[in-house]
Amino acid sequence: MSLRLNISNVWKSYNGKPVLNACSFSFDRNGVYVLTGHNGSGKSTLLRICALIESPDKGEVNYLSGDTPLHPPLPMGELKEGVFSEGNILKKDIGLRRRITLVLPGIGVFNTTVFNNAAYGLKIRGDKSKEIEKKVNDILEFVGLIHKKNHNALTLSSGETQRLGIARAMAIEPEILFLDEPTASIDNENTEIVEDIILNMKKEGKSKIIIATHDMMQAGRLADCMLLMDEGKIIKV
Amino acid sequence: MDSIIEGFRKAFTLIINLDAELLSIIFLSLRVSGTALLIVSIIGLPLSALISLKKFPARGLSISIMNTLMGLPPVVVGLFVYIMLSRSGPIGFMGLLYTPSAMIIAQTILAFPIVVSLCHSAIVSVDPITKQASMALGATPLQILVTIIKEARYGIMSGIIAAFGRVMAEVGAILIVGGNIAGYTRVMTTTIALETDKGNFELAIALGIILLTISLTINSALHFVQRKGALPINR
Image (cartoon, rainbow over all chains, first blue to last red; front, side):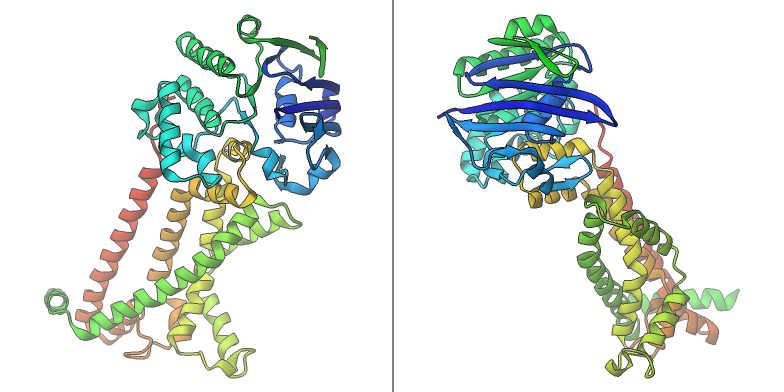
């Protein structure tokens, strides 16, 4: 049963400045959802909240397997239990968190090899090393980084880093993949490569992909469902 | 001048012949400082991670105190440990004064703020995106912690090496609490001080050469670790 995401009346503000205003939407179908809107419209914040990296001030984020809400549903008051570090919320429901993932705009590569970066999610899940090796090699091949698997990830170019971020997320086969501005800081050639990777994933149909981008052209190329955000709300579907 | 040259000649003879007294002093120094550092690493590393990653009341004050204690005068530490371990002190009944254990305690106290402060700096300098990426990939709190410590590994190693350098070269505290007893609590620095006082330069010079060699090795290791940590970023 595929994982569904339902956000309802979500509010968020930073230093008193509202970023999300009663934002609601149901991500029911598989495919690619693209959140667009100008800078500051709340796309990234919404993505981070949906990916359980941050908690909203008010509202609910519910994950459902089919029609059944997953345990526990996520009234946001509860999320505050898991405060680990400044501004970072750790949801205790690891099982749920391991079914979704977010590729951040800065990626956050680890100071180790490209292979170890791509294998990170599998290693923390305790997968067997032989399986990890095969899977990661296949994925690095898929994103065109196999020739750099033993390089330190910090030496990659911006475009390659972006591809590594996607590879790292793909390795764990998330049911919902969130991509925050996946091509914002990379050249045209790498943008095309990243878009091809996303389109191939879409073709495979294994994950629901939710992308935040300010690039309307890109949104048009990738989206099955385009959502326009303004002033912290989804104003048009 | 002749006595200095003679001192160096005899010192090299002691080193080349692997003089038993010289070796026992070196091994005791390494044992005391190594044990102190091991204790500090076991306690200090988790504590620095806690201070760096967990919010709690007086967290800022704890960091300030640790930073201040980095410059703790060794003789003050020696005095404090002496009072604690002396017969009339609160833990005098343990009979640790003038033993290697007392020296380990003093060096542990000296090294503790250095390790905690430098490890704290290393951990907080890890890019917050790394933590978030780890979290987004489904890591448990413990796995996130391990990831952050791994990311900070070069800074952490630098902190531990720097603390080792400090305690190896320290003389004041261990002289007070160890008593510089021949064959029992006499380490490199205290022997150098004593033998220089007595005008016996050969052993002092031999130990000075060894101490400088150890210091050079420590600094080379530190340099290597720092260079390894500062990878070129082609972005």
